[in-house]
Image (tube, rainbow, N blue to C red; front, side, top):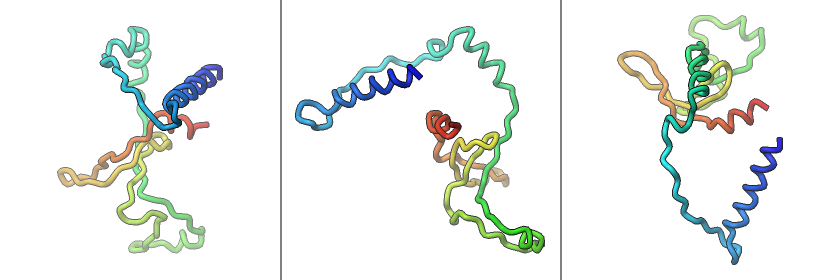
Length: 131
């Protein structure tokens, strides 16, 4: 929790600096170091990551949802149409173990259906949804 407070304080300071003297929004260019794979993870961290890389997860694509009564469910038969809450052309949800991770669209590759990811949910947004 202390890290959150420190981060918020730093954010407030940065926003105050960005406003400038006249209250106008301004930005100062910053030069960032090139990211390197070895610099990101140490030997111990890489070993910890390697232990989970082969764990299977369930990925599913959700076209849409519908709520119907049991009476209507029992009346469904071949050729029945169930109206979904989504409109045609709206992106599909890509779920991993039931958690939304991305949105995508249906594509056909070599006579098989696939999903082209159009928007991947950021880690921060996914963590917020877990709370």
